[in-house]
Every structure is written in structure tokens, then in C-alpha cells.
Image (cartoon, rainbow, N blue to C red):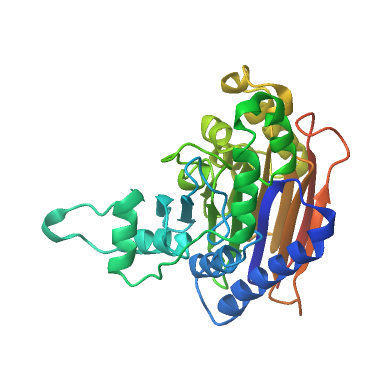
Length: 347
């Protein structure tokens, strides 16, 4: 059974736009599942899902991404294959329509021996990443849109009074990354992330969407993608550490996934020594993950977030249509997490 799960960021999702958010999650799941049903690999499924999300101006990825301090878009993305453990990453890309497709090209290039024994890169940034993409025929475009420009102008005017408005910005923007995880017909996993980063970020800043282990991590049986304040997710290497904490193949297989997830979130993020100087209200993150159990013929899909909301979608190959919803936490953001899961059986 093939499976796809997506998210469009943890943060605050305006209730007036939730039908639109759900629609774009559904479209992303459908794009991935169409590929997976036609025997595409899990990595291709992830690229199709994230590519669909990058093309939507409502998401903070690709077209319509947040603008940096200078008023430009700089996008990050990464992709990881659980079978080979290869990954491709790209950072601070200003004009390529689909940054996730650059990450895909970087990943695939590593499978081919380089001339004269040269080692192909797994991470490219800035102009070098753009030149690499252009030389391989990827589409260029202006990634700014009217909505992102309005938001930029609003907060740029408030810079003189930045401290007063900082918390408000955190509570009402949607962090940071969109992500996807796929399982293909062969049972291989892949995960990926793409992001425009925080609004008004320093030019040249690279966030967790570029850092494999922070933004996504994939093994043969489990994968996680994250969303949140990139600097904090990099400090904690959130994706990789959560995977290692809840990987049942290396722990007691009878342990409850949600109990492991809550414990992992607490140890890795809330109470980590590298987060001790960060105000608790700024401990904002979210994630989705998949666990494949070949012995039990099951897929467990889980999600957790410490933000007000997180918009999520998923679909399995036996379903006629995807499901999308906004997970909402009633507690104050940063104070605790909401964690849930759903199990699917396959033949």
C-alpha cells in the first residue's frame, strides 16, 4: 500500500482561510498519490507533493514565501531517501520556482560517480544552487506575490518598535516549513521539506528546511518532517532525534507511539539544554511522521505540535480521496503539545 502525508506548517492558520488550506493539502496528496499509483518511488512522491505546495501562494514555500529583511524571497528545501539514506539540500534560493526539485537533482546526482573521482555535493546554497538548477533546466520565476509583499510592508514598518510586536508576529505567522512523507509500493520511505523561512529574516539566513536532521529525517522504517522556528529546530536536530527516540525497531515494540512522541518532544525540545535560554512561549514546533511495520502490515501516521494549529493531510492508495484537517491546541502555544496518531492496515 502506498501512502502520503503532508503538512503546510505549524503556527496559526486563519479560520477564514482553512477551507483553502485544506484544499491545497488535498491537492498535494492527490499529486503524490497519482505518481505513487503509477509505480513512482517514494522520493518522487514527496517531490510531487511538495512541488504542488510550493506552487500555492498561501504556503510559505516557493511562490509566495516570506520576504527577508531586504524584501526578497530566499527558499530552503531538502529531500531524504530512507532506502539509500542519501539526501539533497538547497538553501537561500531566490528565483527557482520549485526548490524541492533542486534538492531532488542533488540527491539523484550522488548516485552517479563523479568524473576524476570528484564527490558530488549534497548541499548547495545561493547563486551556486541557482546556477546548478538553471543548468539542468529548472524553471525560474519571481517568487514574490502580492500577499507576501503586503505582509512584508506591514512588519517592516514596525521594526522601530520591534520588541513590542515580536510576540504577536510569532503567534500569528505560520512557521516555517511545508513537508511531505511518502511510502511507495515497494515499502520504501522518503521525506522532504521546503520553506521560505521566517519573515524579515537576515539575508543569507538558512533554516532547518535545508538541514537534514533538523527539517527531515528518514530511515527504512520511519520518517519525520518538522516545522517551526528553524534556529531552534537546528539546535535540537529535531527530526533526527525524534526518529531515534521513537524508532520501535531499536526499543520495545510494544511501547505506545504517542507516549514515546510526547516524551521525545519534551526531552528534545522543551527541556533540552540548548533551549534553556529560550522563553517557553517561543518553544514553537510541529511535526508529522510515519512508521512502517512490515511484520504487522501496518502504517502508523502521527503528528504533534506546540503551536496553536497545524494543517495536515494524508491519503492511502486504497482511499478514493485524501483527508485534510487543521489540528488545533486549546492551551497556550509553547506550553505543551497536542499529539495524535492513526493506524492503517494493508495486505
